[in-house]
Image (spheres, helix red, strand yellow):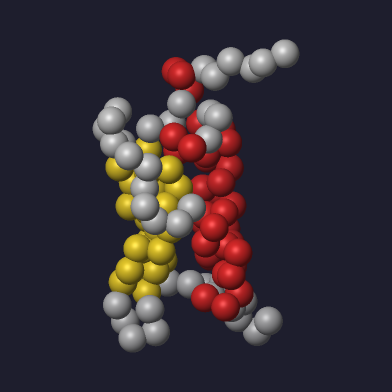
Length: 96
């Protein structure tokens, strides 16, 4: 049975995570593009996971949220799933 997508629950936001580099610059690191997920709950879970993990690592980070226009292409930044692959090298856990 195919599960239909409920477009009323489709998140249209893009949350970009900015991180501070060792030399003090702030760069865009990854984006959570809500349009990539089946529904708003799934997108929110990914956002919550990313926030918790970045906080656990004491990384200097912040979010910028915006609504994607209907015809806007996907973000060119890595997704959270792509970014976290080598997270230990980028943001080691303090004392770990």
